[in-house]
Length: 291
Image 1 (spheres, rainbow, N blue to C red):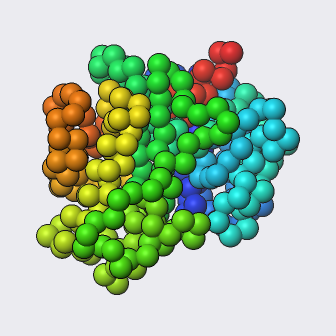
Image 2: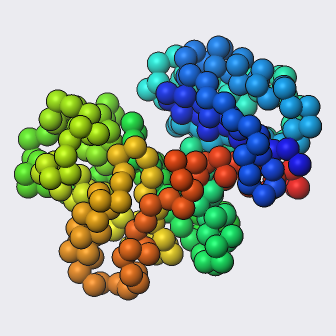
Image 3: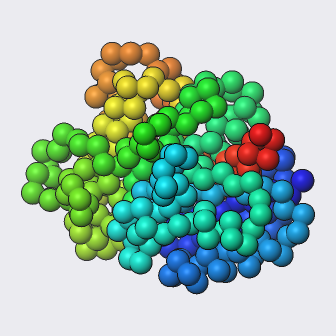
């Protein structure tokens, strides 16, 4: 069975064709330009596959998820230039008569990691997936369902206790300044030290500051949700960075609750190359087809 995935990011769309075993058969990257041009190219790609049965879309946001809203399927008040109030699902439905599942990019990634855990016989009941890159967000799966009903969670915009060595940095979130995203997303490296994070050695103290904030986010999710696992993906994250995050998390948690072995609890994605959303989309598309 042919299933489709769209991982819609602010820089590029990753469109893929796969099957019910979550294997990728074909994939393309489309630059995110204007909604008209990007969605036209997206439709053209999927029209090449007449056997396609269903499609799942994991999009940057904010997006409207409520089926009873007149703006269901829209990207809403995004700061991405030109994309606010874009009828994403409606545009695809004009040319693709398929069952479509619509969710956030981090929800798609969370579901991909959740599905992979079942394949590995981990039997997880809950999982949180953070992405830390150009932006910051998190998706949560509990017993196969996404957390959030009024709308999708905006974990990237929670507030944090400031690191004592970082009190003068105002943060870069245009809405909140020093929320989680405003303090740890990729562009904060340019704002703090004048160069991209990939060029900043892990010995630089800025990574300790970032780890302190990311550990706080992990602590919040731990105490609010008590998930079986927290996964960190995105361009900012690496295993050496997670070593710092785990150390900060252990200090902040102070053995208050048992989360097991930290190297099993705070982890990198099981799906390599930040491909969790594609796997998740195949699974969500299959669920939508089987409804």
